Length: 298
Ligand SMILES: Nc1nc2c(ncn2[C@@H]2O[C@H](COP(=O)(O)OP(=O)(O)OP(=O)(O)O)[C@@H](O)[C@H]2O)c(=O)[nH]1
Ligand SMILES: [Mg+2]
Image (tube, rainbow, N blue to C red):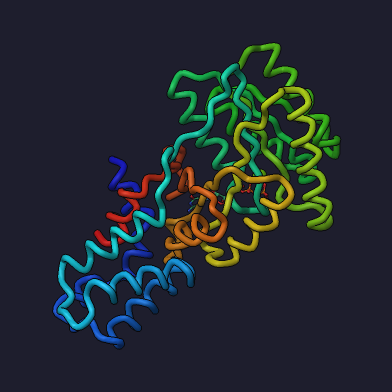
């Protein structure tokens, strides 16, 4: 399946919201703008971005008849809202390993996304080491071990209940000793409290930084798109404590809130690096604004 087909599959539910055909031939008056605004808000594009799009449409199309040109205006505005000089790419360390720290609330899709990412990087010829730093949930390391086996990469894990920062420490040392290209660190999504979780993530980050100067090269926040605007709140909390550099937005295939890509970019100034559009290993796709916008109005 090509990139556009993958995006279309993932965004089908959101695209249904934008009944583009029903726009054409209508007069662009207040009632038209209200309808367009409602559709954008429903797709979780966010208030600020929606406002920008509506104003742009009003400025260039007021009292005219909606046609393909209006759609072009909307698409152009969305593309500019999503502008990213390095779409879908991860920072590569000048000297290996590149370390990617993966965080997010429980069930958001961290472990699955790591498996997909490992597979993708492996297909590019890179050697990968995974670190199972979710020692809180008993089955978490086993789950990652299964994925590691499938993708053919090594895994560092600790005893159940072990200190996650010490697992991170061992993983960093092993990554250096084995000269692997990429170390991906899985973390817990839930501890006793959110404060515990944030403190633990900060500790893991600190250890990684100490053992491998310049690391982590990316701190990727995994967000479940079905959460819509709640995702923004999660992004705020995580960014405040561990300084996220980008987002992996999962489960787009299961929601009509695909516009949250725009809201995350706008409110948090965090680029969406990858999107998850299903449960298969090849269902993690590098984010591309052009393809995203085309898929929304396909
Ligand atoms: N449909 C769909 N399901 C997904 C996607 N990404 C992850 N999932 C599913 O979401 C569920 C949770 O995924 P995990 O990877 O275990 O989530 P996690 O963040 O590691 O969860 P914890 O370890 O409990 O914090 C699994 O059933 C995945 O198959 C996606 O892009 N689309
Ligand atoms: Mg997990």
